[in-house]
Image 1: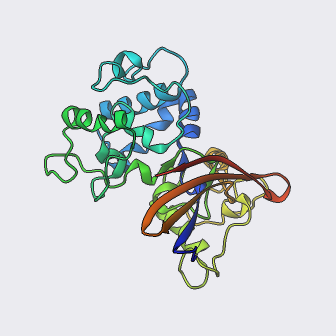
Image 2: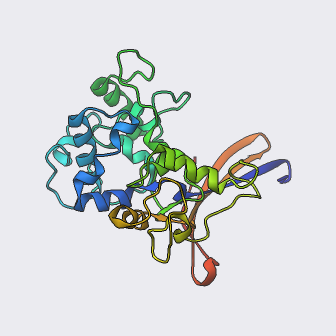
Image 3: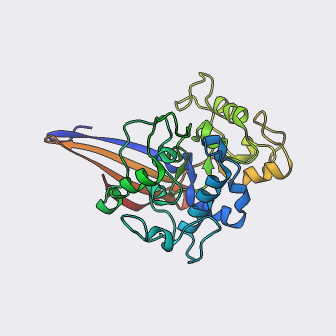
Length: 285
């Protein structure tokens, strides 16, 4: 859109297309074992490394001062260079994952990702780059390094609710308990509509969770090939998925007189008919 001697571009992205890392951490704190299953899918095949990452994420959001078996609290982070405190609270920005023990830039972005700077922008966070490099041997494409086919940033966000099956990717859908890659692909194909192209006007969106899976309340037979129609697996899906999104990242790229800046507003909608909007966070890059 033109704006005086420049223009602005607005992009709206729903947060529920990814998993809310805080929701995952809260559920995993009650049942840690359930959090271990998906990690080999994105390249973390070493059991010790997986346990370190899981325990450290839980310790980062847990207000208690005691750490998990292979996690970390202040006694670990305050001995890094530069030192910093454990959050002991919910993750506010997904880039916080890079501050957590065991998570390297390769795991965060994925091995095939390119042209990504170390994402935190404050000076003390940028200093962690050397810490990561020395501690973890950073090298996105080194042949001697483990390969991570998908980065955590592609799967998780820091706000949102249940996963929206109408906007989630194949990769994020595979993290729903009971769904494999083939079933996730069926979901994408079914919602794409007659033209087979996902994300345009003829999409056949799921209108209610029962249409996504017959095992959900009010459902009949399974609506998606491969999805469990009844039993614990189907009920587990009901706990994780929805067909709507409620939190959105409104990104504004502005260029005025040759000066460029990017703004983000995190907007939540609710109330009767979802018509009440609240800005819960605002920042610029």
